[in-house]
Amino acid sequence: MKWPSFRWLAPVMMLLGGCALGQPVSARDAAARQTYVTPALWTVKDADTTIYLFGTVHVMKPGIDWYKGEVKSAFERSDELVLEIVEPQDPDALASTMAGVALARDGVKLSDRLGTEERGKYQAAMTANGLPWPAFEMFNPWMAGMALSVQPLAKLGYQSDLGAEKVLTAAAKASGKKVGALETVEQQLGYFAGLPMEQQVKFLTATIEGLPDMDKEFASLLDHWQGGEPEKLAVEMNESLEATPELAKVLLIQRNANWAKWIKQRLDQPGTVFIAVGAGHLAGKGSVQDQLKALGISSERVKQ
Image (cartoon, rainbow, N blue to C red; front, side, top):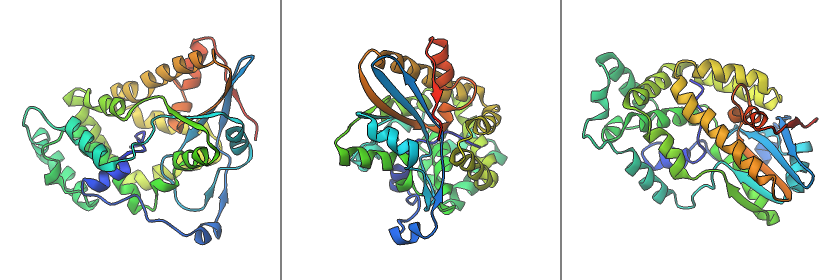
């Protein structure tokens, strides 16, 4: 299941019983197997404002060199970096906040919300990925679904520290750029917490069903991102979200619309802004670019 990932999940999952997404590699090891890639980049402009739109991948394997060429030049020309969220500095506080929001208020155990067959698959999947399912019994299903959307990537060699946002944030701080956000962690948690229970269960079961294909599917999405192929990425994303259109509306379409409105308002201020959000938000029907077009604002792909 190709669910959009949230970049702050890795440290939270580590604190809730999982492991971090991958282990650091030395610069020497990474440099020995560099793969040079050209992910897509767009611009939105008016007379005195330039806004770059860059689709990110939140976790990566070592050796993928994307911070170069037009992407790096555009970032260096920018006065400000804007992300989906500014990642909290205290993972303990973040884990506490997440656990509080995810707590089942009706007292029903998570496993009891699942049928007999579903329950067995759920508990097996959690155990196989180093997640103690008994510790999740007090939470709503979306919490376990998020954990299973992230945790298996560690076993596949993906690392959150190599994600595009981490690289861009470090570069912004090093150069003294302002770092802003389109949302807060609390807002992102709210998208899941506000889902009807039926949709939460569907999210969890669909994630479990997609686990055997996670390696192949995530690698395919990453290949499309590396090759600057948002159209192909959109096809795979759309196929994945067909089973849960309500979730797609909450996680993608509505947020894209909100971000497009933010961009329209930001055009009233002069300057250059580099916006970096998950690549799935900049691909396919209902993307940020589509939402901008509906507002009468055009975006243009940057040639690389």
